[in-house]
Image 1 (tube, rainbow, N blue to C red):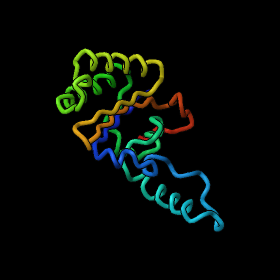
Image 2: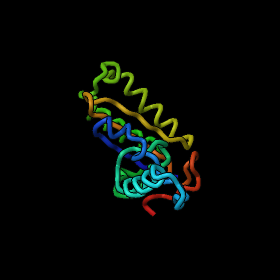
Image 3: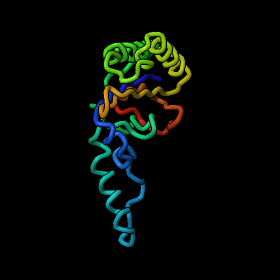
Length: 155
């Protein structure tokens, strides 16, 4: 088991666009499918593998290209340290005073190490001043508890 890190920041309107965050359906539309179903499928296929916008389910990061991985570690504490560093880097820009609280940030890091140690995933999001949103994720790989059939993006 190991852990991958993912980071995205961008316009919250893009983050809220579900079609970009959902993997394409496993079955292609048929010739008799409604036009909007075919359009959604084409959009999902075109955007899913190229965008670094966070997926709807944290484990689905493993379906994204390897180039999006920001770091990989064998131990939960090392992965949580990456989270600590990213939080320290971005916290001064967090919109919410509560989100900037050092004690709260330390709790998030400790909780992340614990969750990863049990094979879970970790995902956090923060406004950096609207409309900019920051997403940080740590995903357990090989196997992922939520989606054990997903393979490691790094091969």
